[in-house]
Length: 318
Image 1 (cartoon, rainbow, N blue to C red):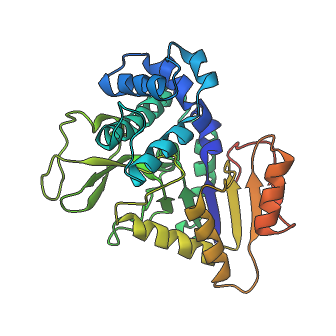
Image 2: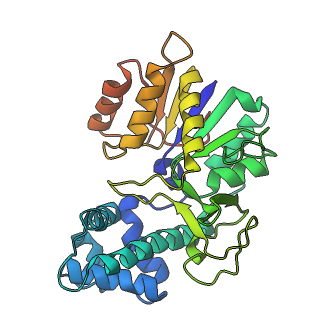
C-alpha cells in the first residue's frame, strides 16, 4: 500500500493561504467589518498586542494565527484572562471567532483554485486506474481540494466516519473538514458536498439528519500548539490512519514539514512504524518546494538517511 500524507503546502500549490499568511489575507479578503465575529478578532488583536489593526501591513508586527490561537487556548486551559477586558468567557468567544475567520477566508480562497486542471485534479486522475485498497490518503487540510478532485475523477472518498460505508479510497482528514458538521446531541458527523463551517456560527438553516438538532458545529482542528482532537468519532479516523502507516510500503509526504508542535501526527507515525505489518521499513518520499537544509535534516532524523526528496513542489505526482 502507498500512503500519501497531505499538508498545507499541497493546498498552497493551488492558492490556499499558509498559516502565516491567514491574517493579512483575511483582512484583504474580508475587510475590517465582514461580520461581528471578524471585527471582534481585529479588536482583540489591537487590544492584546497593543497595536491597532488598520490594514494588512499591520500583521507584519503581530504574531501569526497559530501563535494567537495557542495563546488563547493556553489562557483557557489555565482559566486565566488576558488583561482587564478579556476574561475566560470572553476569550472563549474570541476562540470561536478565530475559527470562524479561518473557515471564512479558506472559503473565499476557493474562488482562486483550479478544480479541473490543478495538481489535485492531476493526482486524482492518476489514482483512478488503481485499486482503491492499493493506497490511502491522509490529509491535515480542512479544504475540499482533494475531496473534489477525487469525485471529479469518479472516486467516492471513504472518510472512515461510518463503518457501514466503504468501497472508495480512504481519505482520512485528521484535522476535520470544512464540509463536515458535528451534532453534539447525537455525536453524528455528516459530510456535505459544499463547505459550510464558515456559516455555522450564524443561522445556516441546517439540521442534524439523525436527531433534528440545529445546534451543529464544524469539525475543524485549528492551528494551535494545544490541539484538541474531538469529537470522539475522529478516533476511528486516527485508528484507520494508524493502520495505514502500519501497512504502508511507501509513504509520500506532500507539502508538510512535520513541525514539532504537531505531536499527535508525530506520535501516529512513530507508533505505526514501530508496530508494522512488514519487517522492512517503508520507503519515504517528501515532496516540498525550496526547503531549507534544516527541514531536510529534520526528515532525515525522523526517517533515516534514505529519505528521497522532490523539491519541485506538488504538481500532481504520485
